[in-house]
Image 1 (cartoon, one colour):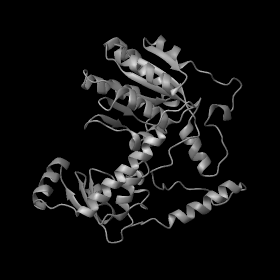
Image 2 (tube, helix red, strand yellow):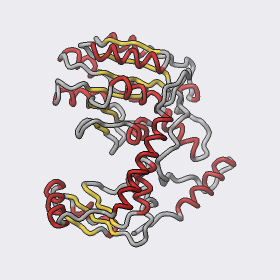
Image 3 (cartoon, one colour):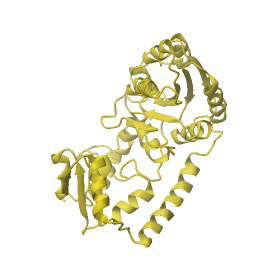
Image 4 (tube, one colour):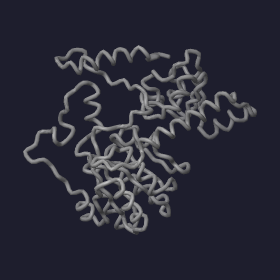
Length: 335
């Protein structure tokens, strides 16, 4: 649910009269900056080992380990189930969302595919039986709502701090924990440049990763946020940053220098073919594809409180501020 949630889950969250918050800090992304849970008669139950988090937003606190607490709640409910109308509504919403997700992840011939279209290629080529790991930038917002995880423990997102550079090192950790599993890392060019040395470590240890590197030539996620708040493109995409020589980085050659098998593909279809080969490889494989820095999935998600300047000479900023003030009226601060 929330900023990176599906439309189906967010609609249920808006209508829910009881919200069971298990092990969550109920932060801005989860709650849509406290504009998501719209039912004025709702009750929040906070099941958490941390008393501070368990009692947030006037929740009924249940301070306990999540597994133990859920087991006791299940016993206390004594077989109670939600009304059939509610579960039927949830099932319809999930079906509708899946149709939306299929559209945005479908294959394309575009020279610069979207992140969602690349995700679709990875899902089709690798299946849902892999362990997928990602962290920062625009990918968490896309993967959180679009990736179809095949089993518990197969989807890893480090998004609490949007930690750029976590991806490859985290993927190596996942492979060390489950050496017989296929581990796929999805990463942007910005994060790759911050930390990539564990490619060499993975090769040295014989712990194969499949790394899909989406190159949007800068920091596309922050650039989109800059534009959404009315700002001019500045210092995020490489072409918009101060430069005397525009970087043209050969990521595939760099990965090869670290010992990996690497290839730059020119299309979504080419990526699927390369991923099929990567499955057969016994050494870490890095596949690079250029992507569109300006496109993100509009379906799903919810509002996020990102403040906009109150005073500006830019009409775009003033328009964004008016929209921001309107959205703030939906917040249930202190709820």
